[in-house]
Image 1: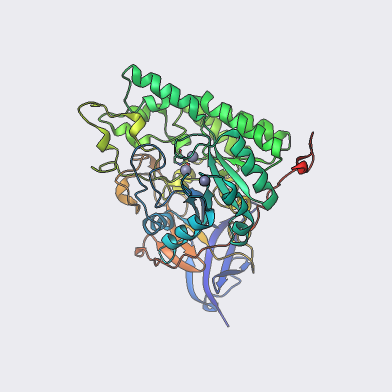
Image 2: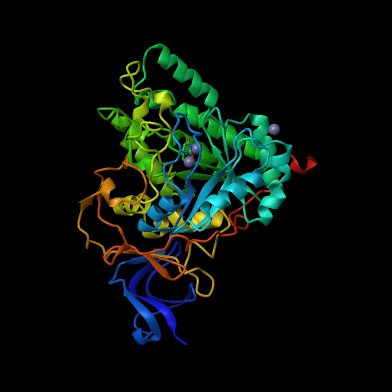
Length: 493
Ligand code: DUC
Ligand code: ZN
Ligand code: ZN
Ligand code: ZN
């Protein structure tokens, strides 16, 4: 019997190839790829004509915060739920997300946290999804649960070198790296030196410097670079694979590159904020700079952006994620405006929750900038994320008989002309985008998840259903792991 869907006349782009193929989909899977015209239109229930537009594996965004309590300074709670965040995601071409399951310092069990997070996501998602454990309390109980986490399909965790609610000491980081290595878990590290940036913040406040732009002053590149270097050293000591998240600094990138050249399983992530925003955006008038407060902060200049783009092109950065970490700007109780007061008429940067929304804009911003080869774009926004976090090749590619039929189909180049991004185009539960006004020339025309059209920009917009998204059990990373060699033997532990 026939196919469920044909996608014809597309320029199919994967991390490894670019060619004209028609794609046949059946039962939610990629069934086959054929030269244009070979598969008759009558062989399928539905036909989508891509008219020469790019057809890519669905976006995979492996750094997303949804429904989290206040952890990142200030009082802000994530304003996006699993429902609104994943809704926004499919409208921007991303079909799989990995969000965080956050363990506060007061909770001993990771399994309990995982169960709670499952309950929040279940029946609420428009995308397929998984979780990284966010480990705030690596005590005996949490460490003993790692094997069970792997059985439950969780193969990654994130830890922090800053934030009062989350910061770990180096010995705690070693505990995590050792246990992760044993179980085939990848450790994501937020690399900023919390003690140093707290000291800087105190000194700035003593001088009455409270405006949003001083957020960047409080954490210069060296704060990130020192922590990155320390993270690499600790990972080398334990021979454990790490991914340094949201890298913003060219100097941190250089340390990561050196580690990679030495053959260490050290991976790196960057985000659109470090390609499109600068420190000047923190100085927007009327406290609007608060919209761009994230950590690490946007850096100084176009030269910094150039270095990050280069790191994407040359492989220093394995993935380009959104770090979607949404907070309302106008919110009396918990938002950024709430910290404006008579005492702090310019606001107070240390009270602004750190993070920007970006789950829906990641792909269009990056593709429209036209600074990466197409295959590299697919690699860093989909394929490598799937590989690093154990989703490949179900996700992240278009392998007949194997991959889920998750596709992002773009407009034919030039079709949309040039237009400005505005928050009114977006589907998140956030009252701004830090990228307001950026010129775009692309947007996903169709997003397909397991064979179902979930976003049809010219035919109904969001057409996916809440709850169609499923939890995906993940395996081990398929990128190189521990070297099992080196100048000392970690197996003595
Ligand atoms: N780190 C994140 O990963 N997200 C938002 C805030 C932060 O510091
Ligand atoms: Zn305890
Ligand atoms: Zn972080
Ligand atoms: Zn984050």
